[in-house]
Image (cartoon, rainbow, N blue to C red; front, side, top):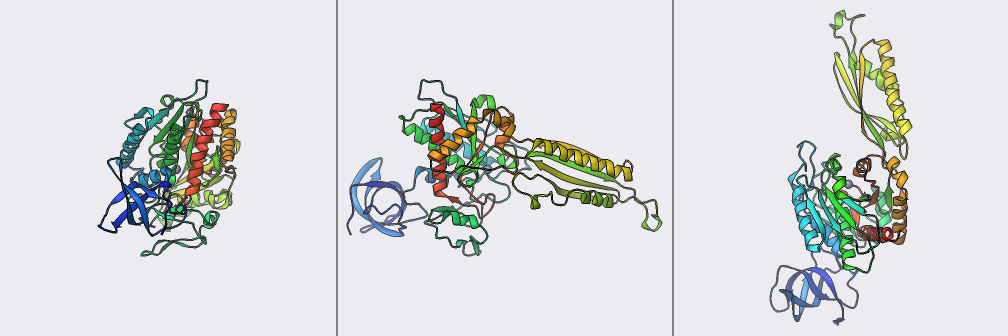
Length: 482
Ligand SMILES: [Zn+2]
């Protein structure tokens, strides 16, 4: 075999043996000689390389070795390497602990990231007792340029375990079923997830079917860290001050809670926490919760005529008065809904819990009025039996973004420069960014690239992550030019 010995690339490889002696162990960043320029996309299971052994930072003599690829990636970029490292941290958040961060793993991960940012030479690095990690890349221009921030969250969803995540790279996805776990017969199939077919020919990172992946939002963290590292390595790219922050407990709705917007000190920011490539979000639901309580009167059923009031039946009647199609399962896009999430009751007392969602503020207010109206109607029939407690939860960030619409224009232009078509979609939920926007930090959301969040079928196409990193770099450039 012949080798082109002129070019070396970074390759993460498990060296099993040389032709003379047995080796085991991992050689990160061994200088592996590129074979006829073909190494980049060719899935190589076992190959003979000519390589230099690197000891104590010094190059040793050239050797011929047989190398077996482990679960690694050809031409593994620092972005992917980071991501694969980050998902090893178990950072599942937990609604029930009443702590910040809600779980210790998140703090461990934040400490690890802090070290990484220090090694990169970032400045103003702070990690507070609540697990909020912030850092700065100083401006390299003397011009007055706004400070832009990038934010991602440390935690993963409570819905599925994030412990012992074993990511695997599916190279050059062929459009068929991906067996995640042969033993347990867990298959990621385009029959159930047709979005997979948007990514044929790409390299995907998937789970082993027993955990979630954690691309939500460790892809976002890897993209931000890598983009900042890239800017640091390319001082010829002019940029203003860039702030980055990684926060805990987004998945339990508390990511923005203890976020110190003043300390962050950015003019605006982007959360890198969206899904598929191109997603750009600056509209989310207005949200409220309603508890409707019905009070009945229990009497022995044998003597109940004209005496008994059954609160369960009142509640049932109430449920049926709400429009049947305005529910999550019948709505999409900008359509709002009433969602009955809980019933608890007996003859004496029944409580319904609803969540109310609408992008449009007026319609949102009218939905709440409608519930109050139905309570009055119920009380007309059963005087004094029905009451309601309404509580607003969060609001659509659109009203905070619209006055600074240029931050959307910049994100769209950055995407186009990265060859990504922006897809502006309304979020059918809330985001940290919405809460931050109302705390004075306008904060739209940009794709991090992953799909099927919060479950075992989560996956992330590698090119989507690479594009997200590029979008961050392009935003930094554009802000400096504005
Ligand atoms: Zn997320």
